[in-house]
Figure 1 (cartoon, one colour):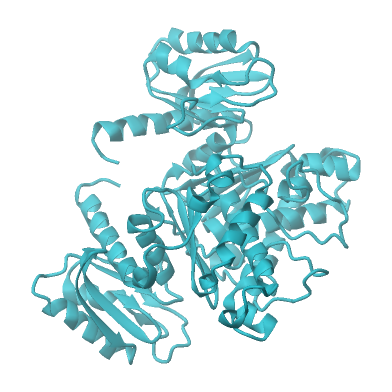
Figure 2 (cartoon, one colour):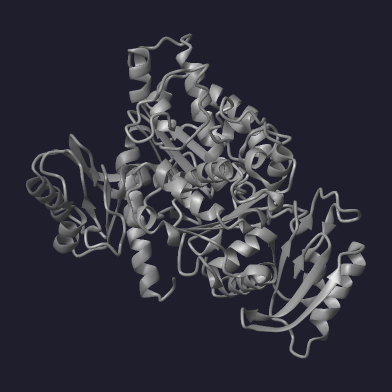
Length: 298
Length: 298
């Protein structure tokens, strides 16, 4: 189940090419919406083995927390402090995995998409905000909070670019300088309205490259997948690649980055299905966790 | 075996409190030095079950590389392109783990020290240079290269601090602004000669805090261990903690960071034994890998 602010998409299957049933439910009042979703899974001819929930946030992902599996402080009416995972566990009696939509997409790209067979990997999405997720040693990275790759402090030359940034916490962090929100406020027009020759794109590439250089320095991913609405602008990705190589300045002199940057920093492969495939990928992890617990392994 | 530029320390044991034998060999010509180390392990009354090598670098850590287990481009005379792990494997017939000294120390702090029972964790050392390692899902983080936490691009206000940095690759990256080398060149005196009231320390805390904020944004560690020669200056760690909390500015509003930062960012616990305990920790991973391969698990 992909839980979005306007719609909830439920699908049954095992992965891309094997989605056997799908339903789209408008996101209404939580208990009715979740009841309808549960009914969809129940009425399917063959019982589901596990459920994965890829949810809009913020969410509580700490398994030791009493509100694990809850949507927490969302402004979405009625959804604040809603237990999303619990009703599925109770009603269906199967393992339930619960994570952010971004982490779901990261895992799906790792299992089936542009980051297949690479580990560790990072997935970054640049839309209204900037978010991201990582897969390390085959599993999603969960730390103190889920890492989010968005609010990184990066160099900002205020003489060359006096824009103060839009982040309510940090002003000119990566999210404050390079999110879709920042583009719209800085240039007075949304990203999709900025023409290819606009100087917005060089600046955008520079900031996103600086963010990726931090990601590379800390996590050393074997592949970076970068997508989201702002990346729909075709000239952006090649510029980001060029600037990452230039900013690393030969320090990380491995072929994958220096010569093969086009296969190192790549667009997502799952497109519009990333959300629901993310949920299916999470369902697989719920099954794997159940199996390893049963066999007594870690 | 801890392989340093001036000495090689070999020890036999299982961990802190159980080091049963130890020898210190001056780092001479490679083949004679390694032969002497191998002889030490061979002559011990009970055979060793595995060997861990925590080595000065740069080293080749890619298991798919033909020079895996080699020291690569070191300026140390005679040691460039030396196969370090191979002779131990051949002579002792036991599993051999090979990694950087920094990764060894990170793993030892995770197994026995200041980052015990936390996961993921990051270990950062600020000495002549800045380096680091991470443990995620119980295992050392190895990516495209080992991540190194040193050459992060951070905000640098050249109006307030015109020092251009000492990094030969990037100028004013974290390593270029805040390493022991940078301190010495910037102030004309080594870190240990700078008095507690010197304004060097506020600047140093600011840059190191900016680096840790990147680490938190990308990896979201549950604990950060920070040590090394520069951190011997007692007033530095409390200032780093204060600046990390201030720079996060409430965005990561979890108790561990905001209220308990003194137990979130901590000094190493293993002190002078970190090197050799790092090697012992690596030996444990060699054994665990052998066991999981034998049982057919991942």
